[in-house]
Amino acid sequence: MDNLQVTADAAALTERVAALIDAGRPGAARPLLGALRRIAPSPAIAGLAATLAMREGHLDLAQSELDAAIAAAPEDASLRKQRADLRRQLGDTAGATADAADAVLLDPKDAAAKALLGVLLLEFGQAGNAAACLAEAVAAAPANPLFRQGLAAAQEALGLADVAFQTLTTGIALASASTDLRNEAALLAFRRRDFATAVQLTEEARRDGVADAACYGLKGHALASLGRHAEAADAYHEALKLDPGNVYVRHLVAASGMLPDAKRAPADFLRTLFDDYADRFESQLVSLGYRIPGLIRRVMGDHPVIVAGGTLGPALDLGCGTGLVALAVSDLPIAPLVGVDVASRMLQHAAAKGLYAELHEADVLRFLADDGRQWPLMLAADVLCYFGVLHEVLAAVHARLAPDGWFVVSLEELLADRDGVTPGNGDWALQRQGRYAHSIGYVADTARASGFAIRALERQTIRLEANVPVAGMFAVLERRHGG
Image (tube, rainbow, N blue to C red; front, side):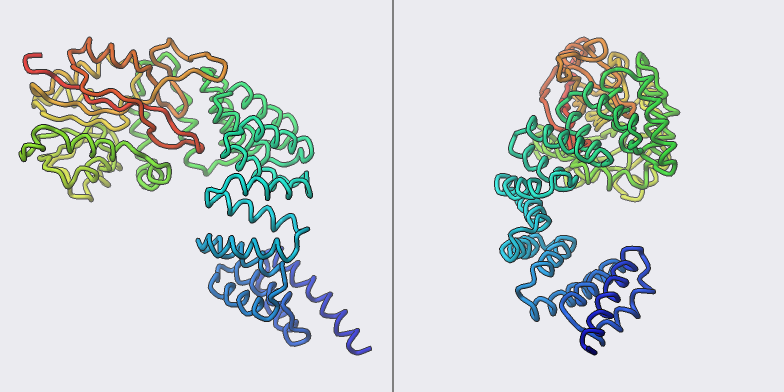
């Protein structure tokens, strides 16, 4: 009888501790957990202790708890699954995958273990095996949003975007309250450049009362991509109401105030935007796989002056920002390097790198008009994406380039949507976040009309945006001697 009472008390206490941990009350859970360990120590109690340690951020302690528990109960599938999740958080993908696979072998009916194994296999690039695991998890729990999101990701990785989209939309029908499923479906439509469907999905989420700030942000992106900028502005404002502290959303609201037919982004807008963004600028771009500084570094290594062993300069870095381009070319004989940017906070970060001989706070067009120097080299990484019409800025650059000088520049490419519709006038269009995209033909024609010879004009991915490669162009334009 005493044993039965202890067992009943332990079961009730275990439920209470689990509830306290779930409620975010670790202080209340800890003494009860200590009592549990004295009354009825077990692998399950060790698992609770590991969960508590993880919630408090003590991941090493959680791993020690789980290692000891698994050593004592090697056939416990739930402990293996829990350690797999912990190892994934610690960056030990191989160990996490091994634990998840063991959990599936020990309990083949555990859908969550199969889903976790599938997600880990996808991280290893094994999309086919991942899809198989996740399909079994979805079959066992069709309404589970996380399982469906994982399966859709694996299917998309296999090139089965239509199947992935069907996986998500079927899930929406089964779990209509899942905001994440709706956002993932809208994001997939966005990645496929099916902007009309993305708008439809976000509007349905709004109608059903499950739209969050991310949903409204996606709606704004899709509307802006369709050239419906006034409606996009409304969506961004709704996103800001739901998440007023989000700096990125504030930027979207500010950018949405630009007129679609404006020929360039106003200098005041750029100053406010990048002063606000300066402290996060570099980490954000790195996380998005920003490629332009590396491309500039590559092409500058082939410059005739550098190849011949000389020093190239003076060089002007237009829209230098925090100095990422200067950092990329810092090992090359390019000197002196001068930077100009409209945002003072960005220039503070650039100055801290100690790579510029001069830094100037000015709008790039104003600087080119006022500074009378001739430059053998000008660089512009993601600067012309804030100009729609390119004639004025290219003419200003050409006027300040020395004979045989190079202008190395990146732009975003104007593409048609899934229905074959190209926004804007076919040459350029205002896109999301206050940036412009240009057709490659327009860039080439305008460069030649401005007096440049085109040494290179190639399509390149600039970075990722919402996990979608941003299509761009990378150009080397030359002012020929006598031109």
